[in-house]
Length: 614
Image (cartoon, rainbow, N blue to C red; front, top):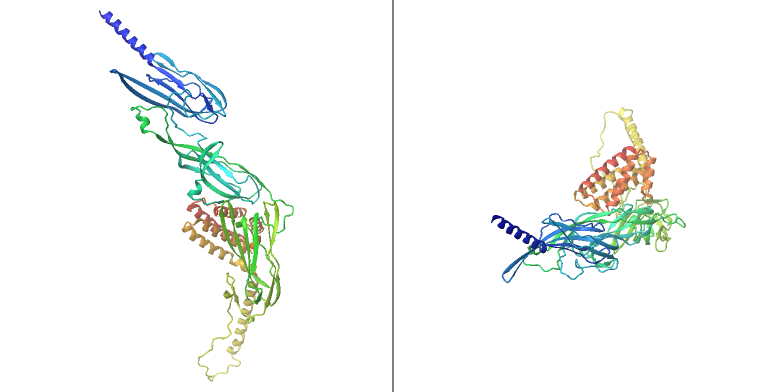
């Protein structure tokens, strides 16, 4: 009896196992044809089994963007009182083809109750002109597709240049732009190309200008966002390599499904979106910078590149001695206007000349840097007569015509008459503003009148022949000689403008550095760097007797070398100049970097004072 029961039980288990094996299905699904560069979904569907040793075929012909992503769904159906429960497991891969051709995906397999279950094989044709598939399979069946990754075609960054071939000093526009399909929510980490070899001036954009709209790129439509737009001025000729940048974008992806969900698909119900990150490479580029032609290059050319015009004016052509004469020159146009050097004006030898004041106004209109630079020259005629101020010239290179152009101001004839207060001994003080009201005469024609008792008293001792008698002659004579020597020395030093500037160099630099420290404490970056730059330029101009029109880095370096200044000190000086020039247009350092730069500038001027001997 026991043997009969055991046999019946064994047969029952075998029948149920066979029936279970018959109900297990394993199917692979993917599009038959996909487009090159587009992503598609490969899915493996398993019914009524939970595989633990699933073996996926070789997918080396494709890039795996995501997967395997496992999802499990259970369904229950009741028919004529009979309840049937079905368990479906799906493994999903997001793939993109590496090259064109026809590829075969071998069957996948797993073991169930000691029996090997295999899926069907797939054949996929990759064609450049094939339409993008929206479903995993091409046979019309309703299959599951989830978007769980971002491909390089979904989001990427490009650097767009207005020109790839420019002249040295010619401006070009660089725009770093993000292309995406509308799912980017922000940036996690950004390191933009630094554009070494260029002076960079960033264009300020509002939110509306940054969201530049929808553009078509390689046949696909993208939303675009401008990360940064700058105007670049190349500082040297040759091929300039721009290094790569990088950025990490944060995107929110919608999980889409084209199958019917059952009531029990709670995972899909609550997880319709997910946040992902993707690292992007902002590819650099090469800019070819052509050297400026040497043929027909004017002698007064100082590196101006663009399109300019120049005009001049003078406050009066009929003045009196010791009256100030203001000559203004205004250069306006588009190009590297901030770095234009002042035109040289040759004033008569009998004129006292002061350092010019410069007012620069630069703005960015669209993708072009434009503005004006006004130079005001102050001079004072000391003697009467007729004098001529010759025309000043300004030369620049025009990239549009590929030629040099020279502009000239008007020549002025001055009629100088003798002033009413032009008497010997009067002292003239001139302010930095150069107006007539600011020139004041300190000589006085009415002196203090003594009102004390002046009665004469008779002395018992005769003055003649006494010691006091001779001291009254000797002491005033000695004082007169000493004062005369000091007076002549003072006149000589005041006449030596070079010596006067040399003595005031450190004082003027200290004053400007104090102003820079005020901006430092207020964390005002651009005014801070500008004051430090003015302090260094002004110090070298006064200390080394370099006219402002000839002041540049090469001249400063050469003059410092002539004065036997230490090479490390010269290198530090040039580094600070370069840091200030770049930081004025592309501030990148924080308060700590500004504080370090300020301390370096103060120490550097102290070192130069010790090393430069006059």
